[in-house]
Image 1 (cartoon, rainbow, N blue to C red):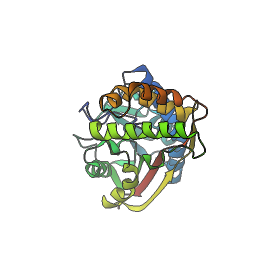
Image 2 (image 1 turned 90 degrees about the horizontal axis):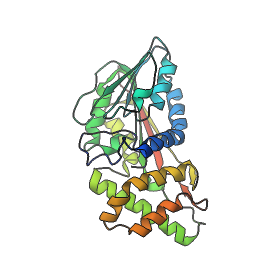
Image 3 (image 1 turned 120 degrees about the vertical axis):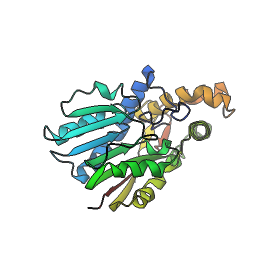
Image 4 (image 1 turned 30 degrees about the vertical axis):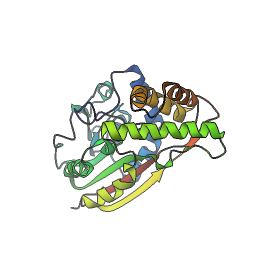
Length: 275
């Protein structure tokens, strides 16, 4: 997925991107540049404070885990989990623990966290509600969950773009969504469901907010599309969704300054575990 940050399940057919690839490190860095400011704003609103014990699930490149370590200080602690921890393990903080964990198959350490944060993870799960229930069980009474998930409903080109380029971008997004849904058990529209799933898990003081931005070719938004489609190229062709020439033209379009699109929506949903 364009927003996929961390491996979620040991089933290699589920998560679509290989963290061992050099381009995946760049993907993670670019995703952090695009999405971290909104995440940090929500963490500020939730009141993350010195002494808190925090859990970062699907830590990816580790930027938010690092930020949380600095926020909670020496009296706090951060546990960062992922199926593949090679990148977050590079973060050096005395109050950080990094642990390999599969949210699909295993419970999280339970009952002791002031904050659990997860970004671009739940949409990859075969059973999103089970995943959320496990996240909630990791909270202490009064602890807060912040879940951020992507929804490609807004991923459309600017209406004043050249019609041919606009059509090319639309075909690329459709192929991206189809391949990930059919071959990797990913819901490209899960973002709209996460607020209701948070409430169904029994949290209180819930809220949600969707955020989008304008992305351009040759900028970070165009680059994240380029890096994503490059990794999905062969699957898109094998599925008959686009020809090799069409996929390559779409990848090139992502580096074209004429490309102007609305980003996918990041839906943030939050709530508190009752005392």
